[in-house]
Image 1 (tube, one colour):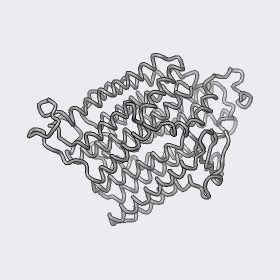
Image 2 (cartoon, rainbow, N blue to C red; image 1 turned 30 degrees about the vertical axis):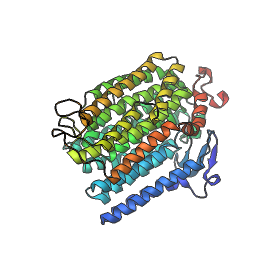
Image 3 (cartoon, rainbow, N blue to C red; image 1 turned 180 degrees about the horizontal axis):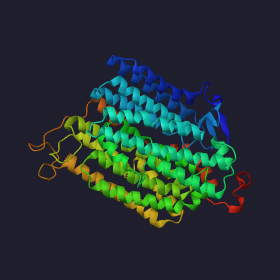
Image 4 (cartoon, rainbow, N blue to C red; image 1 turned 120 degrees about the vertical axis):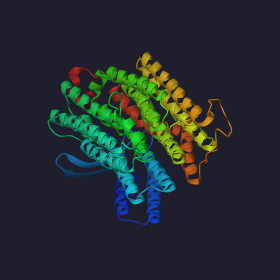
Length: 513
């Protein structure tokens, strides 16, 4: 794995700017009081950040596994500011920037209470997510992953919509802190086993980690990331946070930037390949249980926010099945499912926000209303989550199934397909009850006295819905450019980890190469 310095593509440290700009915006916004200026600065800064991520994609070299836009500055001890991107990480940056801009636009539309502090927390969350996605040093990744908990806690506690938001914020912080500590313990096991703290990714890939230490580090890191994703049975904090927290805000980032799944693909599988092979079957079983458990619980939900929470649990089960395949198709499918869940689940939470603003709730235990554009938005985003052809979810789900079959796990492939069927059941059931059924239960395609017309999407809301829909359809119809971006890195990773190495050669990874 080579490294390409940022100067070969751009004349300034682009990744450093992507981390520093939202951090600067967060600090500036906390000092402002005029709401109009707050929104103007936020939208301008968010648009610039998104534009910089587009520049990053435009200058990104496809078809190579090299780390690009690399910046490296030694700090202290075993910690180094070592950042860069490759096919594994580069697409998370525009996704995060897009969601931040849309959340800012939504906040302006609904006139959030204390907008300066709210948007300051949003940009702080964006900064630490950007830092985590570009980190090539495991300790630096751990620092950013830990810092993510602070703005997340503030957003749930101070801008939550439920009466139990304080308890939900505490549960979120406590359980995720446990995951952070487990991740740190796994990193320290790797460092001690190698005789020195080689925490940069290139050093980790070359480290001589004995099999027993690999197994211990693997489970410590996997359990740490399992809490963060989350996956069954470590998901207890997610439904409560997404139900009690802000309708749109931290919920969009929690479902939109799956830091845990990214961490497994970035630091666990390539660094601990022998352990990944040894326990791949166990991980796949956890994934299948998550698919079935999450899908069945989503099927009985009447609250859209809880439905999306359990739907995310089911889809992250598909991600685990893809990761456990350890082949190119499975790893690619897992990455694309993670990105698609980020986009489509965030889109569903925007729909939840639109409903909550009009009805004061996202429950469907009341007479439903007629709002064609809102209904169409829900339907399109929902179809993406179940992998409908022509949407961004199709190629992702298809590759996970192909990867499972390639790993000779037909039962796992069938489970992923069953998960898509469950997804269709719970999403279309909610769609029918929320947007099509009259009070008596019959279908009612137009407004009736029992089913009054609901104010449809306004201009800013149409912009938000249109942006999400455009990306979903665009990636669904033109998926090859996306595969070109991720293909080089994931093909190189699969070639390294797909075939297990002989135990006698575990001690010298350089010889194995």
